[in-house]
Image 1: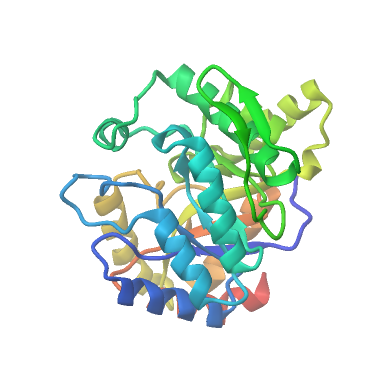
Image 2: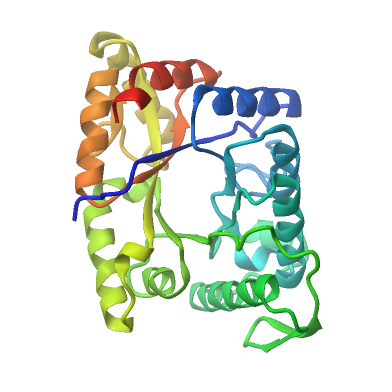
Length: 313
């Protein structure tokens, strides 16, 4: 099950209770430090309250595309039903044009009802949101690749004679994120270029990889075609003694939402400890890491990670 690709390390850009100046400065530094990608969360409201300020994801992706040169830029993740799917496809194509072919659209089913309903979109049952997700992926792939106008008749996604020009410079690799083994992982097996395991299920990474491979076997797809990504909280300090109180604070603040910082695969501790944990994650089948650094100014831990971890993994 050990991952064989070169490891890919992405970093989430601060966007909650942050100004654009703070977000853009962090993104530029993450790129200069040598990270492979930068990521934004796609929420219309702050996760704890609608009153919490948050920068809108696809506006931020386009802006980040304009101020960076090398890093890929993704969303973790865009709820498929939160926007008109055809319009979303056009937005992504334009963002990728600005980026010169560096965008990774991350898609999922969504979970925060008011992000849908307050913005005029229906919040369907879990089953139907996942059907909506699959239909959206089908539409996006067609509108980015087919030269003729696209007509598509799904249960939730319908278009007639849809044109998307210009096409993205590359066919954007689609990431599908989630933890549901019966449906979400089947959709990933069928359609994804990247599967992302949620931080809250980090300890179950090996199980998710196993289920993904089972779905691939069922449909006759080579699982090696799908990159496995892990969303993860990284709590890093120069040594174990200084990391311990940080890990304790992270556990209290996040309460499991971003995984257990003391879990068996957690990236917590000294650089040496984190290098060992990266190896354990790779043994579980993951070769891509989307990192949320713990700290008010996430550039500080990113510098330590870039200096003491990246050259050795």
